[in-house]
Amino acid sequence: MNEPTVRVEDLPEPAVALLRAVLDALSIPLPTRAGEDEDAYTALTQTRVIDVRATLTGALNFGQDVNYSTWLLRWWTEQHPVTYTPRGEAGGAA
View (spheres, rainbow, N blue to C red):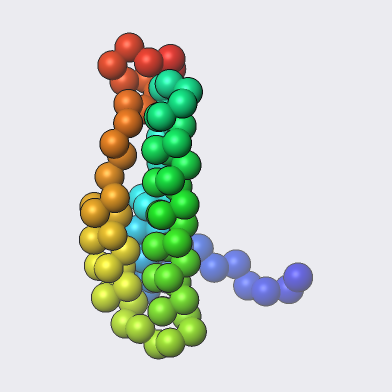
C-alpha cells in the first residue's frame, strides 16, 4: 500500500465531527447485571448501530450534508440513552 498517510488532524472539521459522533454513539458501556440489563444493552447496541449505518449511508451514498448527518446522529444518540446501570457505577463490578 503506497497511499500517503492521512491523519485525523488533516481531515476537514465536519468529517472529524462525524467520526466523533460515530465514536460517541458506539461507546456503549457494558451492563452491571445479567438478564434485563443485558437485554437493554443488546437493544441499545442494535439501535445505535442502525442509527450509525443510516447516518453513514445518507452521507456517503446519498450526498447528505455531513454537518446535518452529524447533528442527526447526535440527536438519535440522545433519544436512545443508556437506561441500565453501567459497570463500575452504583457498586457494579469495574
